[in-house]
Amino acid sequence: MKDLLGMIPGIGKQIKDMDIDEKQFSKLEAMIYSMTPEERNNPDLMTGSRRQRIAAGSGSTIQDVNQFMKQFEEMRKMMKMMNKMGGGAKAARALGGMMGKR
Image (cartoon, rainbow, N blue to C red):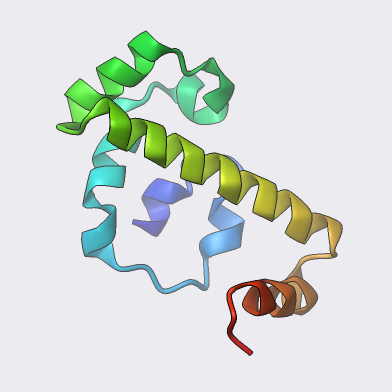
């Protein structure tokens, strides 16, 4: 799964030490594999017809694809914030605080 998420620019380095439940990502894996390389590199290209194609290709609904894209955008914003904070331990502590874990 980490190899798959590594296909999305900027994500690979951020998740290398995370524990990922493979079962939770089976739908996401299918969605990512249903995307073109251009869509993976530039999620802003996602139109309704592209989302419909991804949903059909991954055995998901358009709502599932929309939710995935929303989560991806939130993750992208979080990664930008972490990078601005200097990354590493400082950002991890801040993220842990945001998640309620200390």
